[in-house]
Length: 320
Length: 186
Image (cartoon, rainbow over all chains, first blue to last red; front, side):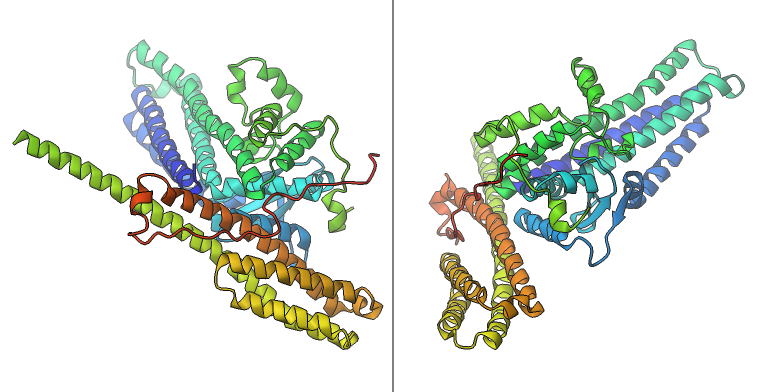
């Protein structure tokens, strides 16, 4: 699959997500309208639409706030920005994304932004302290692939929509539970049961839509990084290093979990849940072991038991 | 009458397929052209840095004439290279010549301490990294494009339609540099 095909496929998927969202929102608003008042349903629909538009416009800032990513001054961390420049040239991006730093001991990175021109990468200080240059490059390659494939666009849309649906359904559900007696229009018991079930399930449907998209992206981004840098082993080594690391990012807001290279939620928990096929549907990332195995298979190599010794990139940057 | 419609339908479908395939080849060709432009920018930047570097080194080591000539000639050859393959070769020659220039510079402590020299050296290293990054992208676009015009049915009509195979910008071996580490594990 060439790059352009992948981009077009992602655009198509974004379209499907939008349509799915509109349908889901229509159902939720319809249920609210059926149980209470038609006008209330319309209000919910309009409110949700406005909220979604507002979120899309301000998504860049919201992500920065939720992840705690700091902008860099013009002279800070030159070698890091150079590395990003080189990787994005190798990826054929029209512009180099900006780099932001998250002051956190856990090694992790993410990409955000709607278009390549306005995208930025977030890198934790922990990542710089743990990874040698070669593996850091691979991680940057992974994030830049997200930008290049328009994953960031797709995922931002999906996130916002999942959030909006959850919010509207939640409000509707609460109204049904607590305020129901006064304003309820009547209607049969069946309608109410239907509404309860529908309003309860809608957020999960939205979440599943979002997560299934997110997990496939991770494999593609790993493969993209291996292709850009012509070095699948570096990506696998980086993932192994992440696996060995036990710290997780403090700013692990669940709503931005899918953005990171490694899932920032507690690993023990996600591994335990991974036992159950059903509950692994709710993970944002495939297990690292699976991702490493996929790289080993496509690259035709096996990772050594022990990671090679290295000097972390932070040394070159002069970070403490 | 029915057969006429069927024939027309088949022709219409074929035309659509041809259109889609043609557009794909055009797109692949444009991607390769963009890839080449990325390399060209970096090669030019590299060429622009060299006179400055030569002047700086001359200020400290004026009698090392042979190396200066070699670098200058390699630079001219690179700027005159007209095809990607030739540019790749000229670029390699230039890299080797610059290597010798820096080896010469090692013998002059004052030069090595000069801020101007250090900055130029740093910029040149950066440009070399960027050239190899741009090379990877360009070569992958060329591979997609060449595969596109060499596979059926396009191989039959690509030439008459003006799709020529593109050259790779190959240099310094296309494999990733193996990581060799001599430091013992701690």
